[in-house]
Length: 115
Length: 113
Image (tube, rainbow over all chains, first blue to last red; front, side):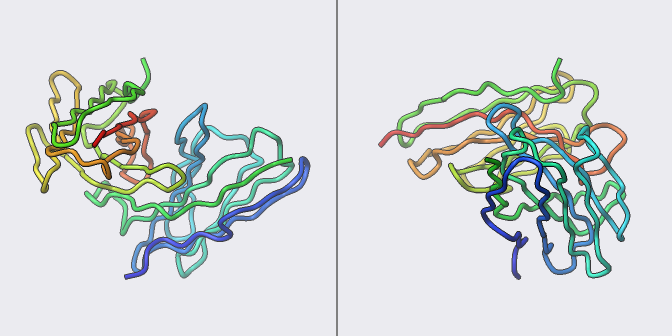
């Protein structure tokens, strides 16, 4: 079974630009969560999508947004990039929701560097 | 108090020893926990999950959950140099499912040959 696939793996942007990252979950997984990992703040939850709806949201500004498609693939978008947005962006998927005991599995991440 | 706290380490152990990694959590976190291993430059990999009080063993790994003390630990027996990595403890905030996790800052483990 293929794992969580994130594209691209690496991205370099400049301040003020916007970026779109993509995530394909494990086949059959319907929930997709996004996290940001930085050396200073560690792993922080951005948002989670299930059935094309954002169900959970973290404490990030509105410049961070996402969506999910009917095939469970998800994208996240960051607009007006800032230097502090440089991070590893991780996508994780799990089969379902409702508090079921199904842990998340992470993709390899997209490393975003802002110049 | 942070929701999930870990000592950043590094924790240094010789090859073959038992490595003990610890995590404490606040009342804001549900009492189900996950341990992820993250090698440098890689993404987190799930190695253990524990949902009830007591011990759970899987190969060389044992997870322990003590709800009364709000404490969760990971023991690695017969530590190998390949176990050298950062270990992350995570749990869901109360009122949310397992799709939203709060992570500790991670403990870096170094296993010397």
